Length: 87
Image (cartoon, rainbow, N blue to C red; front, side):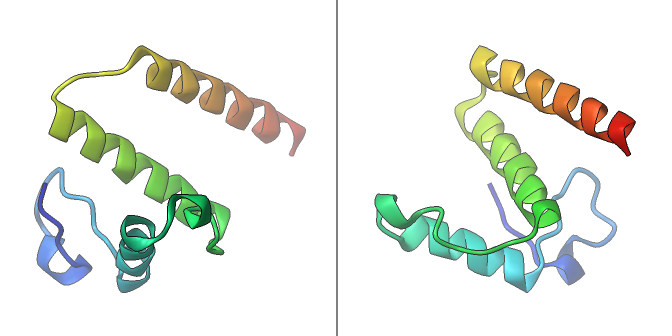
C-alpha cells in the first residue's frame, strides 16, 4: 500500500488520511520489539482509527478476508451499541 499525508490524500477517494502523529505511531509499531508493541499512549479515537487502517491494509495486502476479524468487528460493533444505549 501507499501512505499519504493528510495534505496529499485530500480529495482522493478510498485513501486513509494519516496525521503526522498517526504516522509516528505506525513507525513505532513497525520498528519496536514485539513485547513493546502496545507501549504507546493514544486516545480511543486514535486507537480505533489505527485499527481500521490496519485492517484495511491487511485486507489489501493479503487480498482476502478473515473470518476471525469479521467476528471481532461484529463483537466490537455490538459493544459500541451497548455502550451507546447506556449513555
